[in-house]
Amino acid sequence: MNLEQKCRAIELLITDVDGVLTDGGVILNNEGVESKQFHIRDGFGLRLWRQAGFQCGIITGRNSQVVRLRAQELGIDIVRQGIQDKASVAEELLQKFNLKPEQLAYVGDDLIDLGVIRLAGLGIAVADAVDEVKAAADYTTKTPGGKGAIREVVELILKAKKVWNDIIQTY
Image 1 (tube, rainbow, N blue to C red):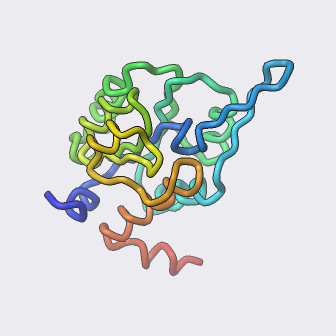
Image 2 (cartoon, rainbow, N blue to C red):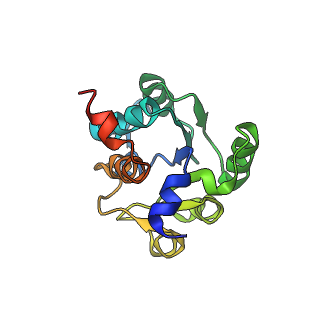
């Protein structure tokens, strides 16, 4: 299958957080309070994805209250944190939603994401991902993680599905 065909099959979009939804930086203050910076267009892209009627979720290796808050703000119900075996969680989600691997897109940036990128029908690496992830991915974004890469992915898939114009007509 070519890239456009792979995009048309996608029903579930799952993303990593650090290095994908953020630039990978984690700020801890003297009291141990964590903060992260999210790109507003990535968040809006995930809203557009949901508006188009598709599921999205987060699987991340770290556990963070900041991620819980951001997911809640965006209406993302699928949030799995502290996960080291991301592929197993992705397989569980595919079973839960009665989907095939070909219907899954996953966006990652580091070695911990390799299993899901290989499992997914559309494995995606952000522009600044490690070389091994880029090599395993079906698509590498032009945009680095935390700088609008998720929005790029959402637009790519929704355009391939021929629903992008319908979405933008609502604005």
